[in-house]
Length: 322
Image (cartoon, rainbow, N blue to C red):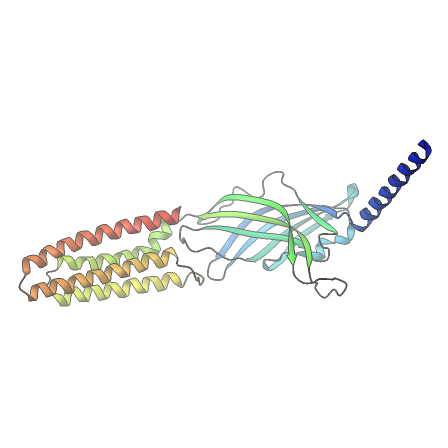
């Protein structure tokens, strides 16, 4: 009886080992590639074309020579990239490859709070020939990942991260052996958070709009019976505000969302219309020989318009700054 029990236990153990061995062979353990980056400069940020340029060093450590990153390196978000310099060291039982890359990247900008916007620059690196079953990136996080001495003109770098991930492609790239058109590639993801130095550019872009509002506001200090002067100033201010908006929009990518630029210009146009309406109302009072009431309404309208305009501007700007 004990011999029979021992034989059964041994048989179960052998079967489990065989199944485990078969599963291990079926599920291949991917090779690892230790990778890191060091950004030397970010420049030529083009909001209109959704582009920016970046120069960086990329290093890779791996054992499988078939990976051949010099030929198979892929940067999915890049419009174009070039290898300025490449060196490969085969000593020490592994391959160490160092590349100097110059990339022109395509990205999408968040302009809802422009010019108080915060952007996230995204880069990722893949091997175009080996999927995640054969290759997995491991980020090298030691040391700095960008030169703290280089300045990104008009921007501040406030966050930086380098992590690995899996990019899903709902296609088999023509591979008929796949049951479903689905492939997965390991990637190395770099994220750079930047915030704009907005003080100077805000006044540079919105000064014309505020001058247009003040021109229209001057109407309250012209007597209500001088309707030609009042309407002349208001119409001039209206066209100035619209022209200022078109100039700003020409420098930004198209957006389906309502941005801070749209809000402030819409607010200015509304108040110009309100001041024209006050002028028409005061003129009607003059025609009825109610001169004192017209003067009083001018003073009330001036106080209400300037106070409401300043408060609403302050509210929307503070909301955008966050």
